[in-house]
Amino acid sequence: MSEVLEQEAKGTAGHVSKYTRNNPFFSNVSVNRLLTAEGSEKETRHVELTLEEGMTYTPGDAVGIIPENRPEAVADALTALGFKGDERVLDHYKVEISLEEALRTRLGIGKLARGSVGQYAKLAPTIEGLKVLTGPENKARAEEYCWGREFVDLATDFPGVVTDPQQLFNVLQRLTPRMYSISSSQAMHKDSVHTTVRVIRYDSHGRNRQGVASGHLGDRAGEGTTMPIFLHSNANFRLPEDTSAPVIMIGPGTGIAPFRAFLEERQATGQPGDNWLFFGEQREKMDFLYREQLLGMHKDGLLTRLDTAFSRDQHNKVYVQDKMQEQSAELFRWLERGAYFYVCGDATRMAKDVETALLDVIAKGSNGTLEHAAEYLAAMKKQKRYQRDVY
Ligand SMILES: Cc1cc2nc3c(=O)[nH]c(=O)nc-3n(C[C@H](O)[C@H](O)[C@H](O)COP(=O)(O)OP(=O)(O)OC[C@H]3O[C@@H](n4cnc5c(N)ncnc54)[C@H](O)[C@@H]3O)c2cc1C
Ligand SMILES: NC(=O)c1ccc[n+]([C@@H]2O[C@H](COP(=O)([O-])OP(=O)(O)OC[C@H]3O[C@@H](n4cnc5c(N)ncnc54)[C@H](OP(=O)(O)O)[C@@H]3O)[C@@H](O)[C@H]2O)c1
Image (tube, rainbow, N blue to C red; front, side, top):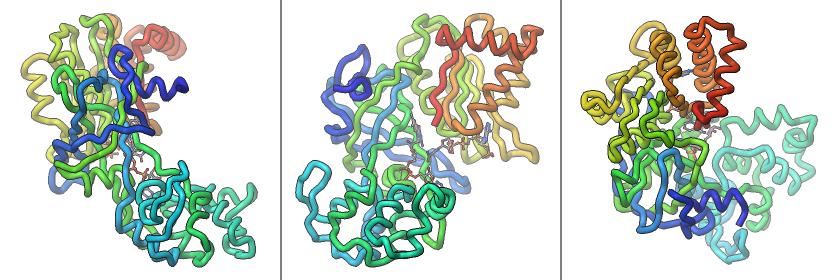
């Protein structure tokens, strides 16, 4: 077993589960409910999946979900290709299945990859419109073509290219599992794993689209349905071993997921350490994910501090890092007390801005320079007191 696969198969205390991405567990969806309220610009869902005995996870881990492409997308692709769906093909393991099943469960027909355009073009070297989308000199043009498009667009724009359905296994990438941070603690929910999923829906190039896995969870994974899953260990995102150490958690949007798991764990196992959560979303009325549970934890004292940043409830945007700046002195006192600092959610902007704010908090608190703050943060990293789970 490779190191990655081995890590994937490991749950709590290094138990190796027999379920992996290639041999998933067929879990039941026991709960699938909307967390965002009517009027929200987001559709974020709370999904609970059953586990069988022996399947264990630790807060900080992720669950891999193996989605299917939506039937309408499969039907559209078949129409664009001019096939019926009952044609026989061999899958990646040389198992014979129908083309319809291959397009639904084996092949990535969602967002278009540049590599797929290249392979498609190889099947029709004389089509000028395809030629200009291939080769290193046309990389930017191909990227632009792929943006917001799916395989169906390629097959519609350049019809008649695929003459044998088996060729699709060279053109399309495999349909891959998607990872979701686990939002529950097994100390509280022995037989299930919870996730917090933002459903991706958008319109582009005249079609309505959705994310493959989040769309599946949003539309076709109602309570009582089955979902193939596997647990994925993440040893780099863990509560402190010292249960009395304070923790600071920055989790806007779906970034709240592992922190719900952390808090449930600390609650269920009676860990005495202080907990400080910074949560952010667009609007308090519609987007305060897990509002009742978090407010309850705050009232009960489990959440020592709870700071929220609802970005669109006032004229100027307010983000979690603005709340950090407001609480700069107290935040630094927590760090000096040995607090662990965690960030989860958007990798591209939020995680960077939060790090900049953290450096500023440290510099201000220690009356030092930003260089000194960078050294302080490097020391925190070394002590595993600065951990991120960003995507
Ligand atoms: C470790 C880890 C933890 C994660 N945890 C969570 C979590 O807790 N909750 C969560 O919701 N997600 C989480 N994710 C993200 C998740 O794995 C999926 O990537 C996400 O749900 C999208 O998958 P999808 O199959 O629905 O969308 P896909 O089919 O993969 O499509 C997504 C793609 O659609 C395209 N797209 C999106 N919007 C637009 C638009 N408006 N216009 C054009 N193109 C667009 C983009 O290229 C985007 O990358 C996590 C990821 C990782 C790696
Ligand atoms: N790979 C994927 O396809 C995929 C799928 C799902 C989610 N995601 C990513 O997962 C992350 C979480 O998504 P989400 O919708 O739950 O939440 P999100 O987009 O991160 O939004 C949560 C809150 O963070 C605010 N925000 C925006 N920019 C910020 C910044 N630079 N610093 C701090 N806060 C900022 C948002 O405000 P405003 O909106 O008002 O600016 C909102 O109030 C995002 O990166 C999202 O793109 C990725």
